[in-house]
Image 1: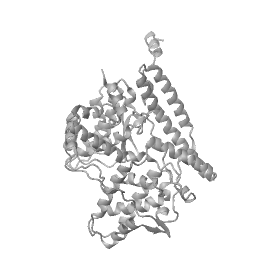
Image 2 (image 1 turned 30 degrees about the vertical axis):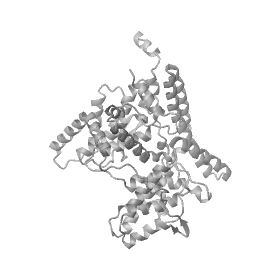
Image 3 (image 1 turned 60 degrees about the vertical axis):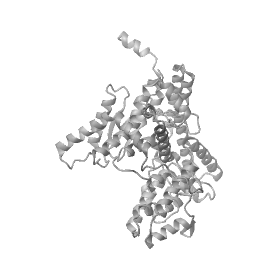
Image 4 (image 1 turned 120 degrees about the vertical axis):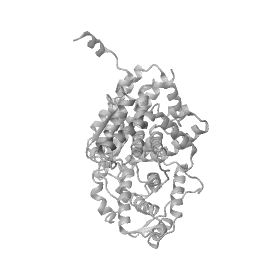
Amino acid sequence: MNKGLELASHQPRTIEKIINPRNLPESGFQSYTELVVNNALDQRGAFIAGEFRNPRLEHSRFRDMSALDRGIIALGQAREEAANREPDSVFRGAIDSSLGFRMAEMEYVKLLGRLEFLHDEGASLEELDEVQEQVRQLGHELYGQPQPEIRDAALNELWNILDSKTYHPTAQVLYDELVHGFTWQSQEIPAMLRAEDGDPRLPRFEDNRALEWAGGQIIEQNADIQALVQEFWDQKIKECGEEYVCGPADIVEVFQAVTKLRDPDHTSGVTVKLVEGKTALSWESPEMAVVVGGKRAPIKTSDELFRKVLHEFGVHGQRSINGLKTKLPVLGMGLFTDTPRPDYLTFEEGLATTVEEMIGDTVPKWTAAKLGHYINISLAEQGADFRTVFETAWRYRLLAKLKNTQEVTQEMINKEQRMAYGSCVRIFRGTQPDMADSQPGVVPLTFNKDLAYLEGRVLAMQHLESLYAARDTEGVAHLFAGKYDPTNPEQQELMMMALAV
C-alpha cells in the first residue's frame, strides 16, 4: 500500500465527515418519508360518497422496521464518535441533542408502525390506548401542538375571508352549516371553531416595510444568482422563442449552475437530482440534494424561477453549505436543542416561503390553503375525527374561493372534496383514523409536522420585523449562515459561537 494512503486511512475522521449525510444519511432523516399512505387514493371515492365514516390508512413502509433500528444504532455510534472528537462541551451538547432528535423521530415512526400492527391484529382497546398515548406524547415533543395565539389568528383570518362575502343561496347553505353545525348521515358535525378572542391577526403582507427592506437585502446578497438565472432565461428565449417555459430538465440545469457558482469546489456535496415520476421541487436533507420531479409543471417566468431557486437553494441548500463550514458542522444538517421548540426547521420553512413570496411581483395574502393545515390539526386536537375535519374543510375551502353571489356547482364541490381529502390524509398520515369509530371521546392522532409551515411564517415575519426595526443588515446575512432558528435564544447563541473566529 502507498505510504501516504496508509497514513490517510488511519487519520481520525473529522466531525463534519462523521455526521455529514453523505456518510450518515440518518442525520438528515425526515419522518414523513416513512409515512407514505399506499391506499389513500383507493378509498377516496368511497369515502367522499359516504360509504364509511373514517378511512383505514395503510403504510407499506411499516412492514419492516429493521432499517430504522439500524439507523438508530448508526446515529448513536456517530453521536458517541463525534462527542469524542469535540473538545467544547457546549458544542458536544448541540451534537448530542441534534442527532438525538433524529433518533427520537425514528422511535416515533416505530411507535406508529406498532400501532398499525396492533390495530390490524385486533388488539385490546387497553393496549391500543397505551401505544396511542405514547405516540401522542412523543409527537407533541417532536412537532409541538397548535399555539393558541397562532390558532386564533389563523381562525380570525379565515372567518374574515368567509364573513366578508355576499353569498348566493347555494353558498349560503354551506356558510350556515359552518356557523351552526350540520348533520352527516344523522351524525352531528359541530360548528367550525371561532377564536375566543376576535382581535389577533397574522402578520400583514401588504405595505410591510420590514419585508420590503429584508427582501432588498436578500436580493442584493443573491445578485449573482439572480443574474445567472436571468442570463439563462434570456439565452433560452433566444433559442426557443418568447413562448419558452422552463421544464424539469432545464430546472435541473439552472440549479446545477447555481450550486457550482456558490460551491465551486463541491466541498458541501450538495447535488441536484431529476427524479422521474415525482411532481415536487424540494430540498431533501438525507441526500443533501435539490430534487426536481420529472412530472413537475414548467416554470413560466424568470421571476418565478429565481424565487424557486432562492427557496430551495438560497435558503435550504445555502444554509446547509454554510453551516458545514462553521465550527459546529451539525449546523449543516440541522440544529435541534433541548428547548420547548427544539427544531430549526419550523423557522427555516417559514423563512424559505417568506423569501420566495416577498421578492415576487405580486403581494401575497393569507388564503384558506395557507391556513388549512394549522386549522385542520387544531380541529383534530380538539376531538374532530377525519370525517369531521374533511366535511368542515371542503366547505371553508370552497367558500373562501367564491366571488360575491357566485353560484356553487357540483364541479366545485367535487374539486374541493378531493383537495380536502388529500389535506386530511396528510395531517392524519401515520395514524389510524378509523380507530375513532370505536373510541368515542378519545382525541384522534395527527402528524403535527405540518404545523411548521404557518408557525414558521409567523416566526420568520416577526423576526424580519425585529431586524428591520434595528436596521440589522448583519442579522439578515446571518439567516443564511446555517440551519438554526434565530428566534430560539439557545440556537442563536450556538450559531454566534460557531461563527466566532
